[in-house]
Length: 459
Image 1 (cartoon, one colour):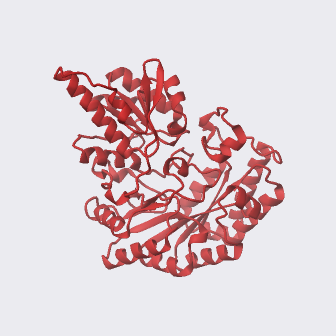
Image 2: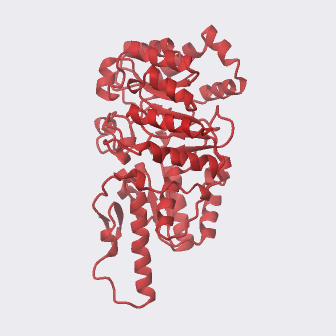
Image 3: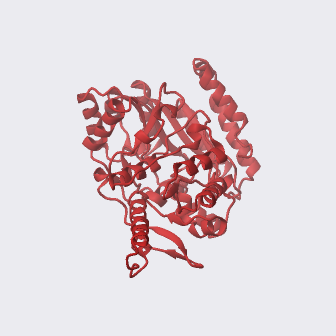
């Protein structure tokens, strides 16, 4: 959810592509960079700290999420204590709660919003200050950090916030992520054989769904990379890194259908042997586009259905379902072209009734995607939903897993929401034809069963 974190299948591991983007920009600027992914290494907190200390860096930059917030602050503080070097934290969570970071940790800088050029400019400022000290040059006339847009930092006993940085418009000008700094063979996703990497071909989403965190860091304006630039990155992924599985991590991949069609045409023209997935909205798909996508290697599409109820769609979900009949045609076309589908559904919107929940479950049964995900509605900090429910009040971040039911629905208790979600899974997967279909993929079935029985465990 836009970098806020979510409890996911333990067999799914994506590369830390945000840090890889940052690394590429600072390397292009002449800095040496290294990366350590403690998830991929199975390192844990102590292992991550030891690896950071061993790197002997002049600046440490950590990614963060809501669900791991406490651990992120602990790690950053431990590295700060062990090295004495400045530490920065980035991510959607800290963008919206910088003061809490400084209150609860020894972090020096919070990088707000899109991080690439902010980290680059921060490194430049720190490097300039260090050179100034080493050469005994005259001190800066002003604080060099004041010129770094998009950061919050300690300034004596006060917390200083520089102006926000504008969103990056010329996305094609960014270097490709520094995948050479990662152990790419470690990344995987269920259903794809072999290593996986992720690609951001666009940023931003104008739908402004009330629950979604993507727009907090990426904004509402849809910014896209050109098709040739995207396919150039795919070529590098295949030819340089030997990876043939790609997951596009755009909030709405097919918002510009003409661009997606061009990407598909270029993949076919270049004979790129790549298998890919994307996430998008039903309203921006149709049969001709899906046919092109399948011919270009698309094997899976994740679709935000969220709610079947038109009132909830309009108020909370960006009104992204044209109508149920169109949705049916999209899912049918995916089946025709052998593109697997996953439908994201949510239960527990404020004021949602049992009747409205039933309409969502019924639509999921009708669409019959290959996979379905029923999550509880989760109010991530900074989103319109969070402001509606909590205002500025704090929340326990570790419970923002997508499975812990926050008490935001007055029509149903948390226990009733949990019961409805479990009921939805049972009704979906225990239909005779679904049981027969699931038996064809025993490993995937075992993962689904395990996930069902651990849905609401404390995480």
